[in-house]
Image (cartoon, rainbow, N blue to C red; front, side, top):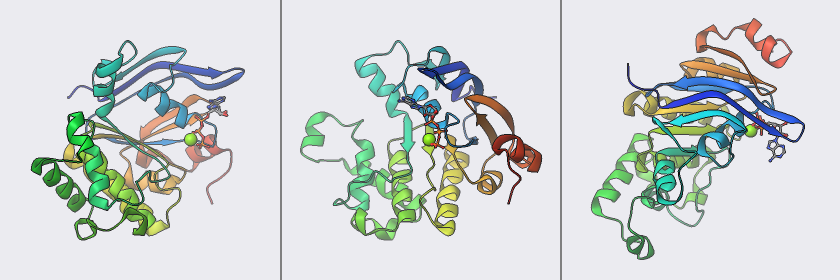
Length: 250
Ligand SMILES: Nc1ncnc2c1ncn2[C@@H]1O[C@H](COP(=O)(O)OP(=O)(O)OP(=O)(O)O)[C@@H](O)[C@H]1O
Ligand SMILES: [Mg+2]
C-alpha cells in the first residue's frame, strides 16, 4: 500500500469558546475520493484551513504528502502548498481571461518570475493546460472568456487548473453547492476521474449525502468538530444520516 497523501492525527482547533475541531484523525490514500460531510458549523472548512496551514491547529499533527508543514517557511512552504490544489464553492477564476489562461495560471507556482511577468508560458505548459481542459471536457471552450462559461463549466476549469498545477492532494470545499444537479454530477464525475486516473487524493466537503454516496469512496462525517463516522460511502445509511444531521433523510 502507498503512503497516505494526507494524515490528520488528533487535530484540534478552538475559536474562543467555540470548539471547531476536536481530536480529529483520519487518513486519505492516493487516488481515494473522500467526502467530508457534516452540518453547517461542523468544522469542515476549518479542517481544510488546518491542512493548508492557513490556520495553525491547537493540537495534533497534519502530514501532507508525507511531510509536516508546521515548521516550513518561505519557499519551502510555497512549494509544499503547490502540491495541494484548492477548489471552492465560488469558482475563483479571473473573469476576463480565457479558460486556457485561467488553467495556465496553475503553472504560475512553477514558473520563474520573469516568465510570469511577461506571461510567457512554455509550450509544455500550454500542452499541459490544453490536455487538462480536454480531461474535463472543455477543450472546445479553451478560448472562451471565463465569465461567459456556465457555473459547472467554470468549476471544471478550476479542476483543470489544479491538474495543471500538478497537485497531488485536492481539497474541495463545497464545490457543487452553487450548481444545478446535472452540473454538480459533471463536476463530481470529473473529481472522481482525476482521483482514480491520476492517483490524486481528493477530500470534498459536501452537503448532499446522495452525491457523497454515489461519487465518493469513503465518507468522513464531522459533527460539532468531532469525527462521528469514517466508513465506506455505501455504508452511509439512513441511521448514519440521522445521527449526523438529527433528522431523517427526505
Ligand atoms: N475565524 C473564526 N473565528 C471564530 N469562529 C470561527 C472562525 N472560523 C470558524 N469558526 C467557527 O468554527 C466552527 C466551524 O466552522 P467551519 O466554517 O469550519 O464549519 P463548516 O463545517 O465549514 O460549516 P459550513 O457547512 O457552514 O461551511 C463554527 O462554529 C464557526 O462559527
Ligand atoms: Mg464550510
